[in-house]
Image 1 (tube, rainbow, N blue to C red):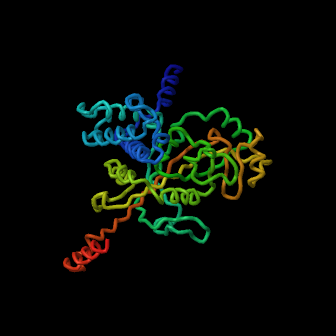
Image 2 (cartoon, helix red, strand yellow):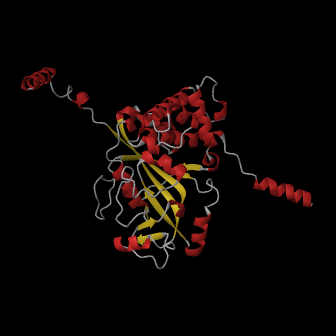
Image 3 (cartoon, one colour):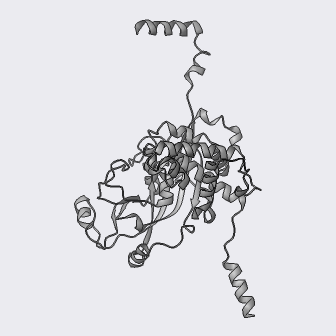
Length: 361
């Protein structure tokens, strides 16, 4: 009986292996996020981690060369057809080149590939589906683009045990749920490295440090999403190329979108809004708020989190425990002036106007 009990207990503890379809969906997420990181303006800093072979072959500081390898390898992976519900990604056709194999094996080696869950997400409220890219009555930005789908990546159980510093402070002060909105090009680095204190990094800091240095979060997911909307307002040109990939279509299908009804992706302006959900250490009862008080509290080792209204500032990323990544996809058709004009204005008039403009110049 003791032997049977021991074997049965061991079997129950053995983690369930994810299906090929589940791994393929997680690889789609990884592929989209690393492509967006490679398209970011600060790609030399945020396009990480990448396979060691990439950095060794072109140099760790050559962000443009690493980005080209990421785009080329990700394109070849999907062209060669590694994505299949009944096919293990490791059984991808052997005609892949070294870079593509390196990228695939690197993705599969990440700890959250096998332990995460990707599910259809939820919007923050009904108005988030069809709203405006203007400030609402509460001064929160919302988006007018058509939200076609949302996904939730559950990474809480895949990251292992919390760091000792987090556990110690969590036992002392307790924990609370918070959200952090960012731009899509930064999501890959945050997902793998966690949130970092960028208050002194002028190149990567986005919104200043009104409450002092630290990692900024909000108790409201909608407030966090407003920061993601703001960050998406002026995307780099290369980001459009990052979105034009088969992995995005797979993710839209996973979100319940009928992609058969969509036009080619290059006919849309595409936005992806990432919002991280996290467990953070609660502010201590003696923690104060306000800019001057925040500066005073930075020297207090006992103060790990400060709060002012809906906003939290954690002294360091080690006091932030990521649990979920929410991705909202928004598509809007591009306005094609040249397709619209000929049907409504005679061609001769267009030629005449063009000639007049040329003469004026």
